[in-house]
Length: 128
Image (cartoon, rainbow, N blue to C red; front, side):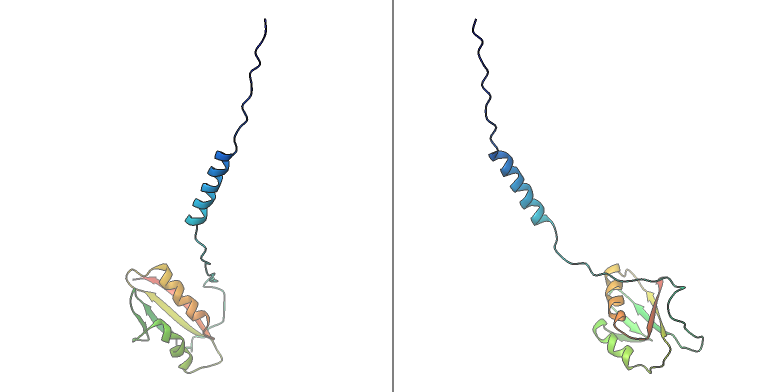
């Protein structure tokens, strides 16, 4: 009796390589390459010392409008308005009231602009 040897078929790597390239292409096209900005937030107890004699600024942030001390403005002009205010050596508190359905992106955009303004200490009050 002769035993027949089973011949092993060679595995083709072509289909595996095709699948790997398709997965690579899928993940490359579905991922985003945008760089997210970082914004440092501090607790309310820390930070600069604000005296009771310092008059705070009041900013109302809405979904489509910004009001600084009751005057309508836009985000691009806010830095100039805050720098033109009478300066003192002490930090000035800026109270930010959120109105309506303000998105977190809009608040982040505001805080990024305020980061470039010296001697302004922003405090977010919350939604009304």
